[in-house]
Amino acid sequence: MAICYAEAAWEGSLREGKGDLRLGSGAFEGQFSYLSRFEEGAGTNPEELIGAAHAACFNMSVSSALGRSGFTPTRIETKAAVTFEKVDGKNTISQIHLQTRAEVPGIERQAFLDIAETAKQNCPVSRALAGVNITLEAELVESLPG
Image (tube, rainbow, N blue to C red):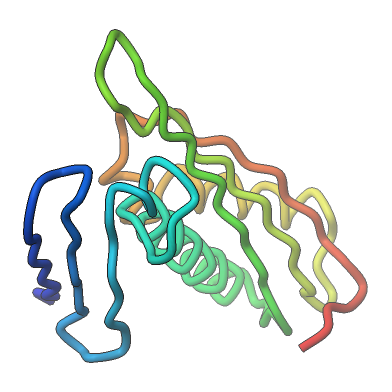
């Protein structure tokens, strides 16, 4: 069983305050604020971090499934668009749209699409976000810049 850590601190009121966060591994430290979450301010926000985690988890799940099927991807690139909006008067992550492109030598298009769809449904982050509408647009390409 793996346990991963992250921490965040907040100072001040919601609108004028600011926060700092860091991953337990030390791989990332950043700041967040009301402006970075709800407007166009500098820094990150929880939804952006969830998007990054989801894209990374999805890529690893696709790679794992490809390996079990006898394929080794050259490269997988995924963007996650996280929709953060009011639903029933409450701020809500309502949708995540994954857009992936992959270079996988020797695989047929439909086999890749099936693997990508299964990964979308079963990667650990997708399962953790089961209450969110998750959509996928997957593309198999000849080559990706690396």
